[in-house]
Length: 374
Image (cartoon, rainbow, N blue to C red; front, side, top):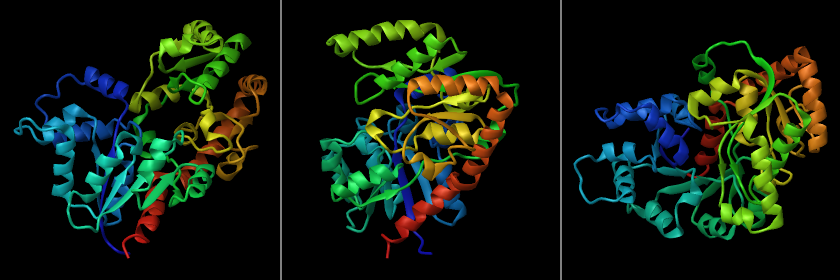
């Protein structure tokens, strides 16, 4: 195996960053490394999970949380009048990677991406990226600068290849260390949905429809999340006005969004986790919640996608629904049969812990990168 140095550049939800520092208000005296450790131990998103396995493989690997301003400021505390992008370039030059992974491709313009790629001035750096959200012209223009692009769905791989892009499948994953950090508790025989809702036809309006249907069913459920979007945009059409009413309807079942280890701790309190992909995914499947829920040993009730069968046994490891009416029927059946729901949850967990861990993901990513550094 050829050796190389891998640097990931990623971003975190602004809401998570705000909540993290509201919870940890005594970080001023911490060094960059101390604060970094505190952040990754919180387990938000992908944290540094994949890099731990790369380092175990003998490949020097690390991640930069580009938009975590408090953290980035600690990297260069004595430099004045320096932009965050300048800090990033200095971090790249100090680490001198052979491969840069940008897992927030939408965050950088083509001009910024080119500067990142060429900042070492050696012409040998390989640039790879991860992208698994709505495809658009901005992404297409930027993607041409990458040597490889990874995405979480085989369906998306096909779409990107149709555009002539070097696309590869790299599934989301679950880290087993999360199981050790979450306290044991007696689970409620209820349904949970944890996640953000961004209003818009191509975003998550379907999740508002889903929660409205649950509310009408009177089944016990709770929604931990935040709703984002322009009120003006919502009110600009009759369909949009409908969603104002839906938001009001679901308010009684809505709690503040949770992140990091709090996210896993809350999820662990319920028997059933509801999931729904964004419309942009179309026939594809494989959002993070699928692996988070199954990894935690919670029964996953998710929307039908052709690609589901490539991930799990849809009769024994997860439960799928084809419409919201069927979602309600299956949710009721799972609530009435908690023993069977538990059996499905444990079967799904076995699959995730054997095939969809960050150890597996690191090995797959390394296989792809090996083809670049010949």
